Amino acid sequence: MMKWTICIFLLGILFLSCKKDDPIPPAEEAELIDQKSDSSYNDQGNLSPQTKVLLMQEFTGVYCYTCPLAHGITADVISAYPNRVVAMNIHSHFFSIYGDPNVMGNLYDFRTEDGDTIVSMLGGVLSVPSAAFDMTKMTGEPDITSNSRPNWMGYVSTQMNLTPDVNIEIVSRFTPSSRNLKIVAKYHILNDQSEPLYYSLGLVENNIVDKQFVDTVVVDDYHHMHILRDMITDPKGESLDAAPNKGEVFVKVYNYTLPTDWNENEVDIVTYVHERTSKWNVHQAAMVKAQ
Image (cartoon, rainbow, N blue to C red):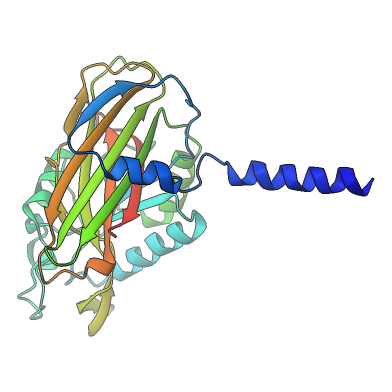
């Protein structure tokens, strides 16, 4: 009886060690990061879907006194769904004084043209704080972006029940001397697609210490999280294929020089596969530390 117990235990360890969502094995990761250029091929092997990962875009500003409440909701979402949320906090020139760093004398200007493009392509943002979930219009909402904060956790829960039809693997290599960040992303199509698919890839930075208006006071040492720094691809996405077929794999290679005023230890690489016709729905997202 003891022998069978040990065998079952060992089999259980073997099963747990081979879960689909475990990190990429070192040999495969090394092979992927050594890719020299973009490529595509067909792999009908393992077509098991990964666990759904959500893209949560929060539209925010440094002079927005209610925005820290929304930051807290995003933190709660990440805590409730560990390793399943790609958070992106977007500041825009469209948000008037709420995103203007000069109002309080902030050190950094988090507004980007890429952020402006994302705001526009999603149909605009009526007020901050607002958020979008997989760039998908939620049931009951008039727009893709929502300022109904009490509903945000429910929207996340709804999206988490979906099964992705694209698997994403992403690896990186940072060279301190040149500050070059090499990024290799692999997108594996799991089901035939009748519509074009696009991918977007960008960089966010965490723990940027700067001023934030909180309730009725200015906090000088607020830790700004998930700040969109730059979209490496077109913010609207780059084409994978006009109608990708089951088993197709697309590998994309980028080299990016990190600015000297960015903390490379706090930079995350984010990517997501989405539509770009009459809607933007995200099929799957992924995030890794720049390393």
